[in-house]
Length: 235
Image (cartoon, rainbow, N blue to C red; front, side, top):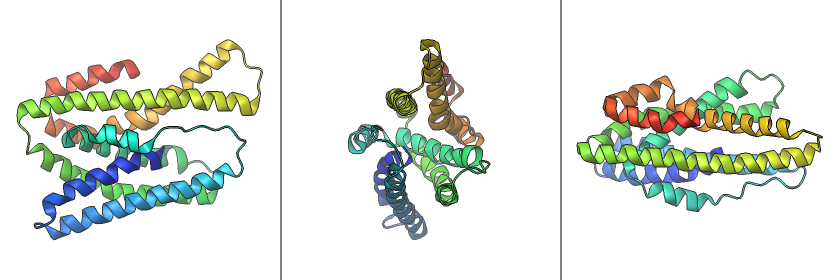
């Protein structure tokens, strides 16, 4: 999933780097390195996926088309896409700190991959905090209001993808473990998994103190309330 979402990030950061081509060369260099690291992350996770697959039973599914998903996201305004990018950069850090770092039973190579991924994403989040406000300064109040609506659409799309993957993962888990779970237990498993996925991919980023601070600077109280109302059913 991490490598999957990083495809659209590279495309958008390359696009916004245009504003610095004949301007701030330090900013341009930083964004180019940002893109280089995101491409490296995609390759890193592809290699990790191949290694893990060697020890996994057949039948796991992750059928989503990364280009199609990236294209749908990039059809939204740059403001909305930058909001999503910032949220993602922050949730990848929370993922490492809350789930990977404290687990002493994980393979050391697996932990190292996410450690160094976390370190580079920390740099990217700093750049997001510079580029998102720069994009915000270009907008009229009505354009910003429309962008909030696009953020809500993007979150809904992310949630639809998570629900679909939850179904694939539950099916795979039941097939591999071959347990005699009751219908009630399967229902609990299904509900617990989407709760975990929503925390991982949506709320650990949205509720991050840095995201909330930045969102507070760029939006009105009414706009933040709209976003909160849209997110509340997912909780």
